[in-house]
Image (cartoon, rainbow, N blue to C red):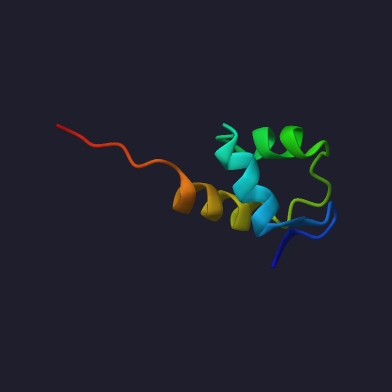
Length: 59
């Protein structure tokens, strides 16, 4: 599925960026070599970041 239509970024693209250390939407755009355009993808991208971010354990 496309996450960002403007830049043709798919869920797989976002996942690869997250695996290489991206932790924010800005990091993902930078890693993908593009910039946000219309902003419609922001919520979907942030959801993917939350879903795939390493979970921290609280003591």
